[in-house]
Length: 340
Image (tube, rainbow, N blue to C red):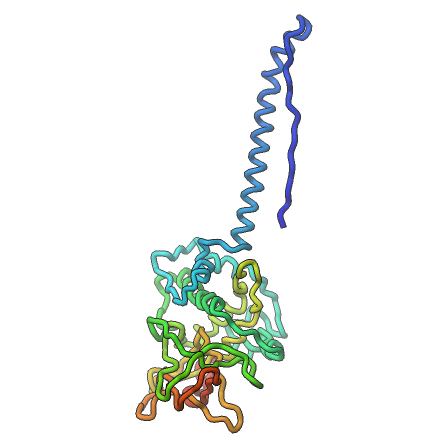
């Protein structure tokens, strides 16, 4: 809300010299009142400038701004995940998203767990702390393209903040993007019968066509601590920015969604170390087949020895058909192996 204040003042008028009795007063009065009038005028200007500054600050913090590092990218429709450059990292000047994140209130306890113990939370306790089971009792909203971009920026902001905190000592291998470039998948998010959110083909897909691959939206966490830190960061991040003055329906629960969407996989092959992986794009909405339903995509091709991150159409898929895959083709739940 904006408070409006008004200031008013009278002006001293020095009349003609009407005689000896008032001539001295008339001559002296300007010396006494003129500085007062000037100070009053100057103070009025300062008040106006202060109110204007407050309005601009409020608009900057709570409204959209064309130069906001996150909103500007979202408004431009950019689907790239921009890695923060080292030259842009300022230890004493956190980004706008970081500032908003730090303003989030952290209760001493939540759902029976102490907030101060969060670095010891395993996968189950994180779900309990954020109340994920209760959150998933209601249908979750679909995620728009702009919101996906915002969530990917949160990952970048998280990485930037960690670099600010530890400086040159950061181990860049604890979290990385599987690919350098985006991949335009022929799918889109939709509500599917009996499953809630899911994926459908956005066009006809031929048998053997590549559906998913490891891209710059695929995040790999090599340690349980790095994955936990990201989930915790999301749990206290601000909601997506407004679109044309309309608030996003996605106001909470991204941490719970990441908890549900993350999987364990040995990388680069079955002999590699167990790691945590999550896609920060539509591919996270992929469902497994219902009872009696066959998967229409698979991890790797029939002739491939390694599944990896490539998923292909097993059959011809019509536009609008749901995309389903057996999770066991690629995921091996092993949170305990990662200390989670």
